[in-house]
Length: 243
Image (cartoon, rainbow, N blue to C red; front, top):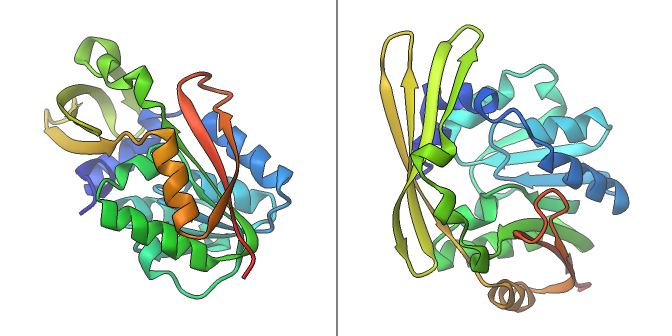
C-alpha cells in the first residue's frame, strides 16, 4: 500500500509546494538527452513533475504510480494529456518498448520487499527495448543519511496559495538492518488538522544492487556519483542486454 504522503488527497495536494526544489530532475533530463531517449517510462512518477518535464521536450512518456492520490494531482496539471498515466506499478505494465526507464528520488528504496524488487526489475526489463537503459538512484548506506532525520533538522514552515500555512517535519522511528523507518508530520494552520505518514526505505549496498541487476538481465554500464548530492548517492546506469 502506498504511504499516506503519496495517497492521502490533502498530503498529495501539497507535496510539490513543500518540495519545490527539484534540481535533481535536471540531472535526469540531461541523462535522457545523453542517451537520446525518445520513449521514457517513469516508474513511481508521483505527482508527475518529471514526466511533464520530459513531455515538454517532445518525449513520449508513460508514468506509472501506485498512489491514486498522487496520480490524481498529476492528471490535473496543465499538459497532462501528453503523458500516458497508469495507476499501478512496474509489475503490471502493458506491452511497450521504452528507450529509457527511470526511478527518481526515493522510488527504488521505497520498494522494500525483495520479491517486489525482483518483480520491479523484471517488469522494467520487459518494458525496455533491447539495449534500452534503466537509470535510478539509491543513497549510499555508509553515509547514514537517517541521522539527519529529526524535527530540528527537517522542520519546514510554508504558506501555500489556496491552502494557507503548513508546517512539516520528519522524525526517525527505527533502523532495522537495511530498513529505515521515519514519520512525517503535517500541521495545517487553516483548521489545525494534523496528519502523519510512516515510510520505510531499504538501504541497499552497491554490490547488492549490481548483482540484482545482472541476475535480471541487465548489464551495469556505469555507476555515477549524484552531481547534485556528491558522495551521498549512487546513480546506476543499467542496460537491457540484447535477446
